[in-house]
Image: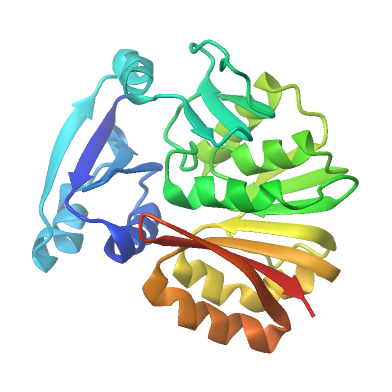
Length: 272
């Protein structure tokens, strides 16, 4: 299947809003670059009129490129580079050699269109927060798993079980691939776009999504956490911090730690 790649001159909050709107229009994957957002859609589903109404009508510039199916893996392989978060966690593709020296945890992924390859500040900051948390024997939920990196790391760190969801079928399939590549046994993933049907209780909840989704599901995330649980949030810009706190604190969350990197925040909350 050939895809259309749309490169949009948007970053930060604007990019996050566009990801949500484009996902509703059928776009299956996104790559956030330093100065642009790249969105991908199967060629058969591409409707330039919808794109024009969403972008050009609002003064947002974009370019488009057709990507042949046979060139897809080569394109991503050529763009994907290994990433290492301190000496704690390294993330590489299956065509890269192991890290030397080897970090505490090494995750192998197949680089596809799903968000969460570890390169973005939101993902790496959550990984930094995870380092100081005891996952041994804990039940973990990963809300918006992307490539499955955080879920896989949670099992590697000793989690008793990890449930993961994503609204994007491509992301779910990529996570399944990555679970297999890393020989994980305790990660379950399925496609879902909300938390309404989930009634389990978890010790740790990971949500690396975007501010609007986090605000919308704050009460549900509290409902899913057991007493003494931990909530890690990312996809938040510093300008959104007060909104997040205003939504989290009345739910009984207590801010414990935060990391800021490249104008993005990752926040750790405990349950009062």
